[in-house]
Length: 224
Image (tube, rainbow, N blue to C red):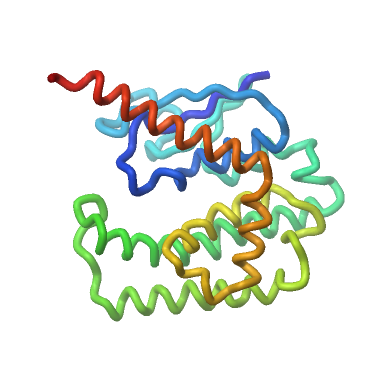
């Protein structure tokens, strides 16, 4: 059955490659399920968007009679019955999935949003004071140090690649994109292992192609 993945119809360049529909595309490529893409307008938020996602965020999926938002819930749903969420080790995979979203991502997002506020204040508001940014970075790095220690002697968070790795690597890619993962060689190697997977490469290529097509459509629709 084809899954519908809902994302935005267009975004400016800076978040492309990191929008959370990437997590959904990646897991779908890993498990070999076909999908189609539907879109919501970025502005103004549509009634349909709020009906499917009360916070008007993405991603949203429609899978048969199931409509889901929140990337963690979507990964759990799509991983069910596959090697990405094995019965043996399910609790550990779920634990690390929550760690990716509730511990690592919260710290990363807090810092990254401040960095973005310095770079694109029209989207993120006034930049915070330098010492505030530095404090957020130290907090993030303390989480990254603990994560590196936890996985230094293994390839994946649990025994085999899982939905937890998809979530964790998607968070760490944000850090890597800002050259803030350089002090964590084990995490760099972990990200490199995961992003060398064919499913990731296909998902990212399609994700970027979506935004490129959106640019063309936007240019075509604009008055001369």
